[in-house]
Image (cartoon, rainbow over all chains, first blue to last red):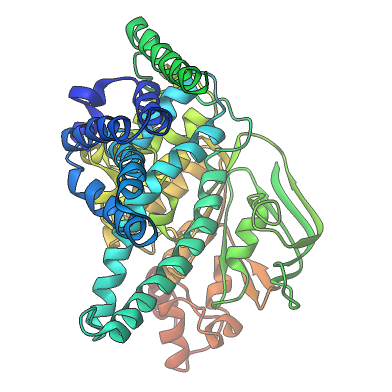
Length: 225
Length: 262
């Protein structure tokens, strides 16, 4: 977390800038004609994922989509849609890896958002690593009880059920307790939180965000003409 | 001065027939420590949720009767599981402790002052730069309590606050509870650390299946009824086991005095 507390490289950018990049890439992937458009945006998104050491996660998450597309469509369509989906997946994986939720909350609160709204937004980003860690703990516990994730499809399905049910139930239980804890620490609707260390937002970055939005609108107008 | 007043409170959780609390009336004054004892399912945690304005407002359910808080400061509740009380929004312990005060919208200088004081009171200065998720249960419990103290609650509600602590940590916490009471904080604590309560609690409340069975001084922990319900102190239980006359002493010091007087 030390690196996240003192961000380096691209992660030094303001959280809104990171979100703008992560939003603009998928938008452009779907607007610009494929396969060249999708290929370009996917390359950029995967490059970003490499910079955040999240390349493998992005590839492994995107791979099943390619498989399903190939089963449903011909090769040109698979490539066209596949690159776009890869862009979406890689952008999301990158922003989750590069943007610590506390920084996002600080930025949103500094921008005038209510603390609870900022928390809900940031919790979406933090859910993936939290659930992954919990799934790992549950898998370890089930292994201790003799459940093996190896074997034929039936055994694997049984192992998946033994992982999924406790994962969902424990997540729901924790939601209840966390709601109480946040409430008692005054994360309530309408709370005006004091930002403790708001990220700096330089003029250059603000211009860059508007430029990204303008690029998306321009690309859309170009496609619709 | 009464800080919290519960008047004939009956509470039911959503979709349950049996009430978790039945006709409970209780007052807690500023500077007073009131301990709730009871078996599992007695309703102690529910009473804390009701007193902290978390039930039914957050957990749902139906409440009859009235709960009045004098509004001096906030109501701070420490729940029994520290892992689920993390904000999830802090890089380090200092930020975690500052989470509540920041949500109160205080000035940064005031937040810093309160957080540093709370951290010093809990003796966790050595943890301030650690990431909260890497802490042990006991360390985390102290961080969570520091986070609540930094909000300067007028009413502090503690649910099994020593469950994750080692004996030294537990002793320090009980000393802190007494110190907070001396400063005027009203404290309602549910605990199964029965041996610690005679030195901590001004009054003891015995709950059983949601009903208030008895209320009195810490000597209640040496009553025949509580000892029979396995809710007496160890000293009282030993005295009872030795078939010595009741009321039983609740602490070693009391037992020595009684023994010498025989």
